[in-house]
Amino acid sequence: MLSTIVVTVLVTMLLVLIAINVATPEKKLERKIEHRHSISDEQFTREMSVLLGPAILPGNRIIPLQNGNEIFPAMLDAIRRARTTITFETYIYWSGKVGREFAEALAERARAGVAVTVTVDWAGSLKMDDDLLDCMKEAGVNVHHYRPLYWYSLTRLNNRTHRKLLVVDGVVGFTGGVGIADQWLGNAEDEHHWRDMHFRIEGPVVAQVQAAFNDNWIKSTGEVLNGEEYFPPLDPIGNSPAHVFISSPASGSESMHLMYLMAIAAAKESVDLCASYFVPDRLISQALIAARERGVRVRIMVPGHYIDSFTVKIASKACWGPLLLAGIEIHEYRPTMLHLKMLIVDREMVSVGSTNFDIRSFRLNDEASLNVYDGEFAAAMTEVYEHDLERAVAYSYEAWKRRPLKRRLIEMFITPIRSQI
Ligand SMILES: O=P(O)(O)OC[C@H](O)CO
Image (cartoon, rainbow, N blue to C red; front, top):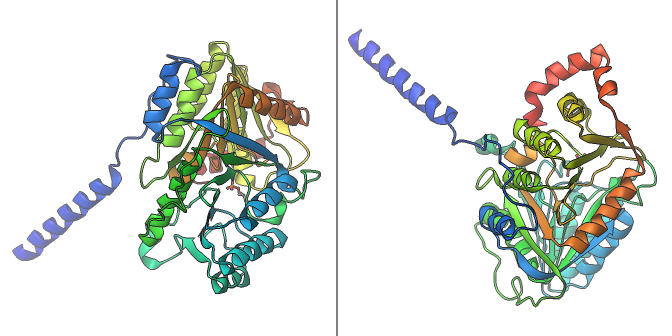
């Protein structure tokens, strides 16, 4: 009898100890970041460099690509010109015309002797037929599924790689919002062709894109891809200072969150945000409102009627009230699904890449973003932003208050799980 009690007490203590260890994570960012310096201030870029990891490197050329019409030909052209190495990481890879073209182009290069390495997220590629994988594997492409479903990895099932990275011969890089699927074909001309941007990158910062690819490759395979064919010397080729940085729950998950908070806190004149999935947390909402209160014009562009996630649509709108009331502008893009992820601050800094403006991207997914600190580039991106804005309609606080009761009820169910969507 006594021994049963002792064993029960010991087992209970052990379970409590385990529960406390599991339920007491390290602290996340929870305090507001004050406005101390502006984007053009050297202190701002110095802090961005050291806090996010990779140094800001001068001498890059960043070419914006609009929609599938420009994005896919540019990526495929770079792949077809590869001489030594291709590294490619993507979240969405679905069967279809685009998926087939990429698989065949990658396979062709592998057959020609190029070392082709591909990381495809397991969940993001559930709609990818096996024949595309076979086509690549038979040609010698080294393809890995990121975090496939195994009984022993269930705790990591919710942490996907959402990164979108392509590097060819270590000298040309690409990142942006695009997935490998037919939704992105065309020129955003109707609801079947999404609006998105990707960026062709040349110059010293390409090495950071390569390093970002290596991060998950090492995690998946234990192998590092190095040597001159992956990291050649990269001379300055343009005028844009930039860096590429990553975030992951496995290491430095707060980088993205921190980057957005610091950039918004630094804003003096304007914050222009284009967010395909806009579900801000409390800190981000506070930061946007604080920026507005110190006179910053804050414009947020989100998808309107056309959005592929009903839950995001509901969770997003549920948080618009205080933002609109503070004078923040929210515009709904009309022609098609707006999938672009871009932040422009004070027409000085631009952030683009895979990162959505939601809690999943800040806390759960592996992301990679490119920050460019170049007024000329930011001005060009502001023009693009304003062109898109002409195809959007402003949403008002009055309209938000008039949301139907049914919608408010659904919001009550979705809001508690908004970090997961
Ligand atoms: O997660 P994203 O931003 O790559 O978007 C993918 C879409 O949700 C696919 O439906």
